[in-house]
Image 1 (cartoon, rainbow, N blue to C red):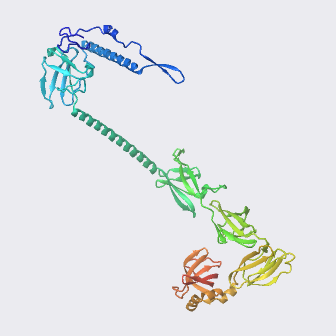
Image 2: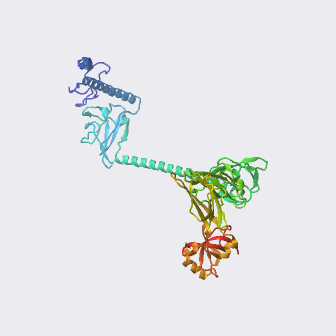
Image 3: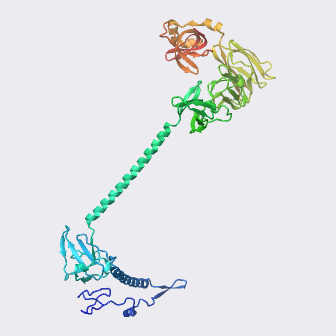
Length: 605
């Protein structure tokens, strides 16, 4: 717009001339300017036709034209926005409201105060402060100040908000009217110290919030743990115990003295004494009536009730605990291991269980064969020449869960059948024994162990034969028989018989274990063991070496302090450490530089 006073051109949005300060005439912004028609923004954009390799044509505008049109529209909207802001400020000044949209900013190296009147056309009075905050005075009416957009640092150190204009610079001369006619406000521009205070304030707030959160967290856990502690103090106590020599549990339920606590599962009431009602429950109470399979442990629950003075029952918290269910004891005495190789069709196995136990072998009940005092029983197993013969022993004792043991007797497959009679003894007190056997008719028989009177009369017709086995030493004697035929694999049977002369014969052969015989035995153990020389041992059992088989050490000197011997028990008496016995035993070997003897007969002294 051309200034009517000095004739220089100004922008249309300037209220006064930037050169002479004269007021510029305001045109009606709603009317279309005459020069608008000369612009080419409304003309149609150029179009480009693109043809692909198939001959298809596509018409599309140039993106540069579209961008130019959008920039022109943006410029128009910007100008209209400035005019609208000017009108709103003018209306606000008439109503006495503070001007809005007049942001005041300052360069960080100066602290300036700006006083702006409600009327945008009013004079702006600037008061400048130095770096220490002292008033450096105000500018007079004839001074001219150059104000640039925000971010351009000028000589005076002032900045300007873009709402005053968006060109390179804006220069205005303001004349100062009387102060009493001006309604103004004063704003102090922010500085570095103010930003530091905001940061400190934010850190303090964060610290307070953090401390509050921590206090809440620890307070919550404190009260929670306190409640749990109180609950534990009021809870019942369960401890393992023994009742009637059986596993049990003792439950102590807190309560007021004199009150009664009824246990529903036990159908019994208990009086609270000393602050607790004491309940003892044997573990087997929970599974005595169960006949099916039981696990190693069981979880049980007691439901207590407090009987009030009015006769009502108030339920308490259920009491749950875990009990162990022991296995029924079962021990294999003969053979020594659960897998054993045999050569005869019959083999006697021996077991030990708790008296009164229910025992089955391969599904057949043998409970009536269990000794009522010792719990031992024997089983004559029929062993087929087929390799492994499996025998499953199941035992269920009172107050225990079912226990299973598997024993495998191995017998080699035979091409030539060879078996001993089923009634062949496994032990004898005689020095000889009749042995009967059968094999394939026409087979050749050979007896490798000591024998006499071999009878093979019916061998070629029925395969039966017999002989007398001779036992040349005390203890285990093995009978060995071999049957052979041309073109077939020979069959061998090894059968062990335990031979011990009767006590009347055995004890009369005993030598006293004095110092002379003790030293002689150590020096000639091989010879004495081969002849199974019998000795009488008198003394106190000092200590045990093994429980199965039972082996103990006894001092045989007169004072009981020296001449130790190791004795293995083959008698029917079980020795007790500290007890004194008279034992008849035969020489066997040495152990830790002491004689090792096998005891056959024991007498209590």
